[in-house]
Image (cartoon, rainbow, N blue to C red; front, side):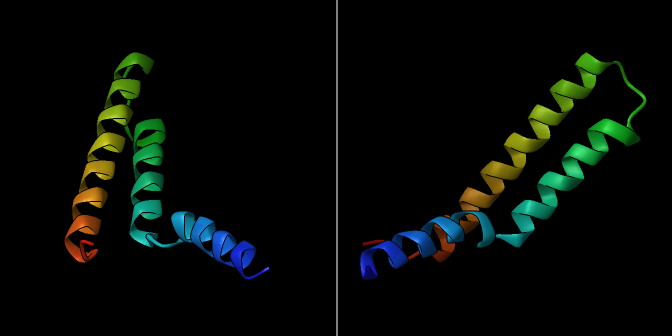
Length: 69
């Protein structure tokens, strides 16, 4: 039972741990959908670039704060 609780906490932590990641994703989606009067293809490319930048920044920040084993 303890193992199941641990797995559940780790899984929830993957999605809840970084609030700034969630906010950045929401901003990128809203920005590409509403704020930019561009053709759909351009918005899609911009959204992809923004989400990749958010992901890279989050991975770099996490790697700086996570101790290596």
